Image (tube, rainbow, N blue to C red):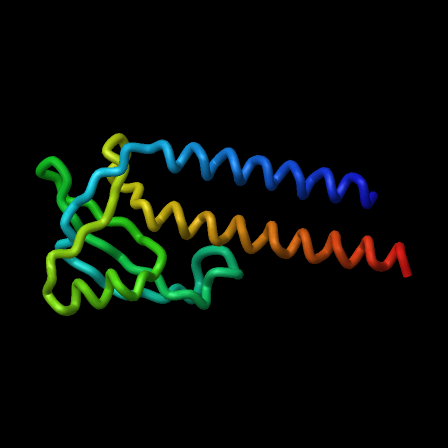
Length: 129
């Protein structure tokens, strides 16, 4: 049982590393933020991330309007509120995919990986004691 659990944790770790490498190879393009709204979900999404604020960002890419929900970034939010030119990075092949949107998914994966490692550590310590 313990070996299966540790194997699963290692498999998830390798998958996480593969996704991180794949996302870092994308050719992200900067676009100017036209609208920004701070949102906090209460009913939709993973339970672990419901308490965190996020940003709903509006932008134009190749003449079409898009929006995406991203992780809350205080510097981005403050920059937009102070009426400075604010930019985000998007995937040109899929304009609804923002860089910080991908980071939100990473935080979710990191949280589960961290919790799995804690459980594995507790199981190992239990066997030793």
